[in-house]
Structures are given as C-alpha cells and as structure tokens.
Amino acid sequence: MSRIKLLLDVVEDIRSLADSLQAVATALGQSDPEDTPAPVPAAPPESAPAGPPPKAITLEEVRAVLAERSHDGYTAEVRGLLQKYGADKLSGVGPKHYAALLKDAEVLGHGS
Image (cartoon, rainbow, N blue to C red; front, side, top):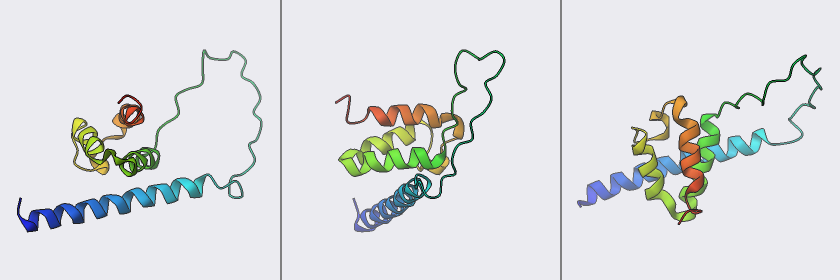
C-alpha cells in the first residue's frame, strides 16, 4: 500500500473519530439532568395498546454506540457493518437501517 493511501486512511480515521467524539459529546449533553425538563404525567388512554410504540433511533445514538465499539478495538468490524448497510460512513446509512445496525453493533464484543 502506498504512503499516500496510508495517509489518506489515517485522515479518514481521524475524521471518523471526530464524528464519533461529537456524537458522544452530544449524547452526554442530552443526558444532563439539569437540562432535562421534568416529565409531565399523562392521563392513561382508554384502551392501552399491547406495548409502547418503538422509539425512533437517532443518528447520534447509533454514532455513540459505533464510537464505543471502535474505541474498544472493533474498528474493522464497525466498517464492515457500515458496508453491510451499503455505506462507507454512518451518514450514508439510511435511518430505516438504524435499528438493525444498532442491534448488530451491540453484539460486537459480546458474541466473540
């Protein structure tokens, strides 16, 4: 592999790390109890559904988990997951795939 290619890979890794750090900072900022308003109790519905509707998974949540897995030494596996969903970067993965990607990423390190 040429030196230029290696340098370009390093630059890409640094950019990915920066994205991951931004996601972690955002996630930490969102979990600050001082900034979170107190929940307002809602009146129970007349007929409760079988379960709560699935929570929409955000890009930041997926990015935080992928950043953690990458930090734990699974960078190549994280890249493989992104490619599995047709992207080179997380921003290229469609929101409809976030839940499946998150589920796959959570298995990393636990299944091996």
